[in-house]
Amino acid sequence: MTVFADSSRFIMDLGMNNGDDTAYYLAKGFDVVAIEANPALVEAARTRFAKEIVAKRLTLVEAAVWATSGTVAFHVNEEDSRSSSVEEVWAKHHDAATHVVEVASLTLGDLFDRFGTPRYLKIDVRGADEIVLKQLRGQIIKPLYVSVEDCRSGYDFIAALDEAGYDGFKLVDQSRVTQVRDPKVNFRFTEGSSGPFGDALPGTWLDRKAFEKLYSTTVRDRAGNRIAPKNLWFDIHAAKL
Image (cartoon, rainbow, N blue to C red; front, side, top):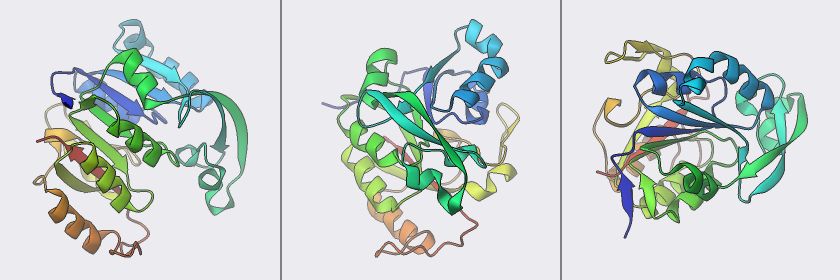
């Protein structure tokens, strides 16, 4: 029997990057476990969130989320840290300069075993998103809410989330995140951040069939061809209703 962690009071931020998402989750009153593979970004976060770390509201995990535990080569994009990835082809997008660092690797199961199941799982680990979703399906206790960046064909992501037991979906245009504010905590979002989640998202939760119809007319057609303008990018949110 699958259980959803509706009483959990922490959030897991997979792909912390510059920490702007983590800052929002902390402002919302949640504890946070943030995972980031880029050593420079982890070091910056230790300074930015020094008080929260001391107060044990934030735990930083310096590692890549991957298919196996151990170590893995991580390709750091020197022009845009958000494009860094275990997958070299993703990190070198637009022929960007990169360098490689050897980092620890953990599976989603490793993280859940160590810290428990979060209320919300934010997935933004370029090149490994589908791996994480496949691992999520095997967890007995799952987050109540999940989001994943639509960086490949979202139909596979939607199917994986459906198979994991999620029955509510929302599509969020991330290019407009700077226009969004969470009035409950008076928080404005920076460019590139993930924005609100769960009940703070606008709009109605859709079932899989209705959501795929929306996705097929908004982002990619049924054949997988992108129809959205290149300056737009999207996150897929899922919930257990």
